[in-house]
Structure formats: C-alpha cells, structure tokens
Length: 191
Image (cartoon, helix red, strand yellow):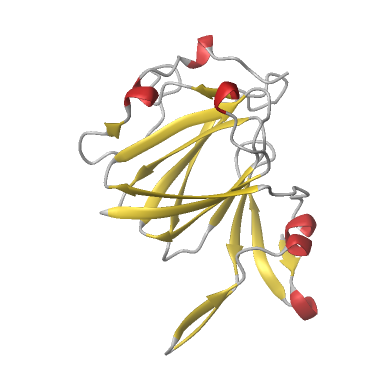
C-alpha cells in the first residue's frame, strides 16, 4: 500500500505489521550529493494510510547501546505513537494489550534507524519499548495523548512468557522503574 503525497506522488510506503492495526511506514527519500530530504509527517498522508490520529505531544529520547526502555503504556489515556529514529538504530518493540484483539499478548520488533528512515505507527492499546543497537540513538515519537504519570503502566521487559527477542549483544541497561514492571499475565488490559 502506498499513500499519495503532494501532487499525487507516492510519498509513503505503508506496510501492515504483524500485530493488528500497527503499520511500518517508509517515507520516500530524495537524496543527492548534498544529503537528503524526506517528509516525516503529513496529516493527509497519514489519514490516507489509516492513521486518523491527532497528535498532542512530541517526545525525543537519547539512549546509549543496550539501553532497554519499556514496556510502557497508559490506562486510561491510551497513547498512539508514531516512532522514528533520526540517528542510530533501535529494535522497537510493541506488545498488543487489547483484550479483544486477535493479537492480544503478542509482540513484534521492528528495526528503526536514521539510515533506513522507517517509522512505526503503534495504535493506542499497545505497550511500547525499544533497545538501542548502535552506540547511541535519538528516538522521536509523536503521541496522541498527553503523558499521564498516574495512568502509566509497565510490563516487565524480560517477561519469560512473552519471550521478547531484544537482540541483545551484551547486558541490558534497564531503569529501576522498568525492572519493576509486572509480568504480562498480571498486567491490566484494555477492554
């Protein structure tokens, strides 16, 4: 599937992810000896791709190699997220937390990098996290809901039931908060 951009040009390749409702987006990149240009957000193109979201917050995170952040989500105030990496590389992981979804309890990892320019649309109702593959990575994401500390939940990043492959090449660097996440079986789910 391709979403049309300005003047009808194909500006974004849209690839359905394995998890229901999630999308991998590949923007068209225009490059020459000076560098490159890409359109990272266009509301009309996003709507044509099936992302009708209105974004209310932009976030920028920097992390070093093997840092694992997540798996975070909010109940209530579910956040849809449009994630991209501008420098470095990550394995971006999402877990479907929607009780009535055919992919509830499943996870998927997608490599995002400053080199591949891919973006990941994660609908509300998913837990989200990532592991830094490169020496460091700048991760930017747009969110459909404001951050709500009282609504935040964390699923244990290394839950033995989920068996997420973080593609680690050393020991994970995980915050105290994320180490205290709950196993998926005990996590609150979206109705």
